[in-house]
Length: 205
Image 1 (cartoon, helix red, strand yellow):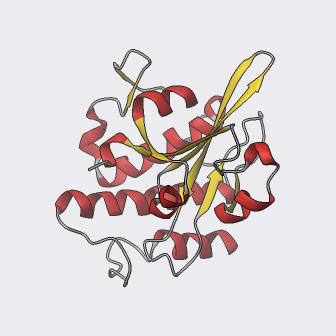
Image 2: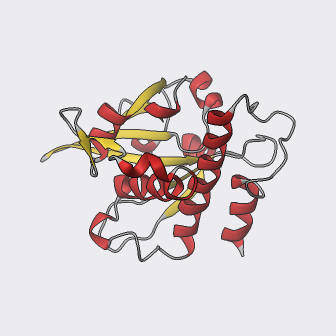
């Protein structure tokens, strides 16, 4: 029931939900389509909290895998013709069905910034990104933003897979993460491991 409530509040009541005061203006067919994509993406991501979809291959259940799965599912429902070609680009910039966390950031998403203005501009489908330095090399971690179109309804949340095999998808309030998480996981400018907020290239103006 809690997951269903999150879906209804954060994703909107459905494709025909009226535009609420403070919601982004729908200026044309592309913007209307992208609103539907964001709502579906939120529903897919939040649904994984209750039960991971069998269509999400177990070998791809990590932070980047959740992003890929949610984006593909949203496009499959509301923009299936886009999937006639791969949704992602590889390290060489060539179309690809797969992209790891680093490649998603460097080839498929664009930075919004690391400050309060970027935080306020976040929309569902944006990413919160970190790079943790380890002995074996850097490890990138992504969290998927889910935010209601009317910001007064509920705070921005993140939905993410922690990366360990067999681990469950998790969620949390983004503002709480910024104040209560261990410093290396706080999305604040003072944290050098925080890379910033990112948006899918195809959703940029």
